[in-house]
Figure (spheres, one colour):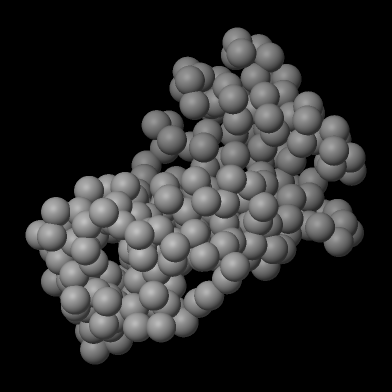
Length: 244
């Protein structure tokens, strides 16, 4: 998509906010497809149009106001990459997630939590906060119905790659369970010879255990963990308990 068409797609966000299906088909999809490869000038144009759309939504009486604000803030965050500083970009991802949680917009919650929980962790204040954001990804996937298993696997891979490499020193008493279940377990899996793919279902179960979360979609992780070609370390089996 060229820059002119991309700006036109963004402009439709303003004119079609009262028509959700048209908005999704004619504006969001082409916008998402084109924005990442756009030049900075195009991003800035689109960002200004999104600000106008945001203001229009804020002044509306729509019952789905928070839903649309989450969608707009998500696109503002995508536009912001490379043209503003990280702290301001982070604020747009955070706004998108906050509105998405309030509105029950699972897709935006997933996309924004992925960024906040894996890319912008320098703006978090504790290990527990990072995990809460990452857990939002798991919950959003389980609440949706789009490629649930493959998406959970991707999150599991991300969790393993993230925590096995991290040395987290700002620990509080509130963080101890999270450290034992996530950081220590990721490093234990690595020592046992687990690769990303085999560790993925185990990491999904571990983070779910930290937050006492269960859902039908987690059956995939439970089943895969019980039939792995490599034995799950005993310390992790004990942590998972009745999930296995």
